[in-house]
Image (cartoon, rainbow, N blue to C red):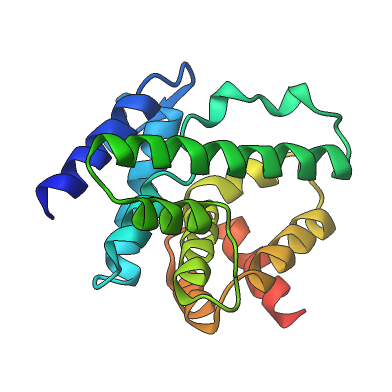
Length: 195
């Protein structure tokens, strides 16, 4: 990893380290939620695509940059409310990572490329945008799907997993089937794939 990339990762991690929410990290020690998410995104990308571009590496680390600053509860608990919140989050994440990249001497074109990836522009047409989506889905399946499934009936879980799978590439599907995940999620994923 080059110094500039290390520097921008440091700034992203510092920002995400201020997340007031926390969850147990790999060693059981409490870690700020956004910081842990960014680290998980980077770790999954390193396995999925070891030759990933620097821009994609930054976009993965910054996927949920300072996400807690705009709570979901600030928007109506409707489908439209969710989409409005999600779109505003993407915009904020993109602007913030571009600002952090400017502090580490990345040029305007590189900053805009990363911002475009974080906004998820060109999924299904842009290989890096698709990889970012694959990584986000894989991290969800491995680390967050079991908790998300709690309190939902099987049909709802399968529906969510089918929506997740539709966002993913064929390579993403292959990797998803091999992920370590909660047995109930793995079983539901199998049913979601069978369709």
